[in-house]
Image 1 (tube, rainbow, N blue to C red):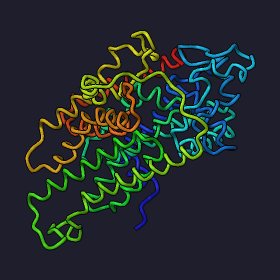
Image 2 (spheres, rainbow, N blue to C red):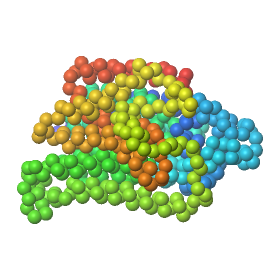
Image 3 (cartoon, rainbow, N blue to C red):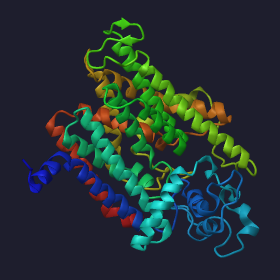
Image 4 (cartoon, helix red, strand yellow):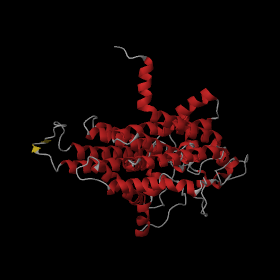
Length: 456
């Protein structure tokens, strides 16, 4: 018997109304904010990203020590960076003759990145430019709204696997959309834009693999892609690697050994080494991608990288400070103005501070309320550990590999933010609390839209 089209549509809307709403809001909010931005660039390195996009069709990549191109130099001299204003020689002057007067001495710092993110941005942004007639930079910025919409869809499917209530998913999704993190990440050209989606996708693939629905090779493939886009995504890979190892240890309490197999009624054919094996494979895939790109960068380098003047001494105090970095601060990540306590996007503290409560209360609450034998034990344990140790771990990696340290921006935790919010969703069982969170998130979304033109 054929189901009427109207009934099929009704069933679809009943099942997927949450991601539909979140996608519409994400596109509406991030798209609106991107459109109302002025020509001033984001202080989160948008200058060098725009230069990368300008050069992509002819060069493919940018080279270490390469000078910024004419178009980006003109934008810096004439429009400058949000809050700070124009920098370098006067607008319309001979930029090449005075190129060392620009920030970073007029040299790119975007050679760190493969062309994966920039290629996708150039193609999709070009299509937006042709279809809508918006200027090229705005079209590139609008691709961020698409990354956020994808993040919301993946977040919905991950949360549904863990039985997070639909209203709780909606509330947490709106909180992300309206956050300062999203303002900087999804309305400007920003290499952090794919990180939240990739972190959620890694958790989704890992959960599916553990439950016997997907191959573990999906974890490896996503890990390679994540590291090919941005090195800080190693944190998301480490989080799911820890999840796999904790799951393996957790399962070994009750399984019996039969050669190289384990007896599991639901997964009789999975090797005993599959869980830690794919954790190692995911890390190895990321390491190979990073290694290959490092070799390529060195082969095509023109000179050494410019000194950005951000390094500081590194020691036990700095390392300890990082323990309280990502967990409270990633979702509310803002830009501090150099030499002041002011924020580049001045969201009133009374509006933004509750965002940090969501992640802190979610992670701590989920961990403290775990029950022995619960299927949530491995994922909650892994994410709780990652939320605290990820920042000091990354600080150690950077200091060890580069011999220098700079205070890590909270936005670097983007690839584990989805896990923090998952734990928050797991703890949201009291309906009045869910409605209160939804009211707050919806109210913050309205504030962002209402003030977008003023702060753009």
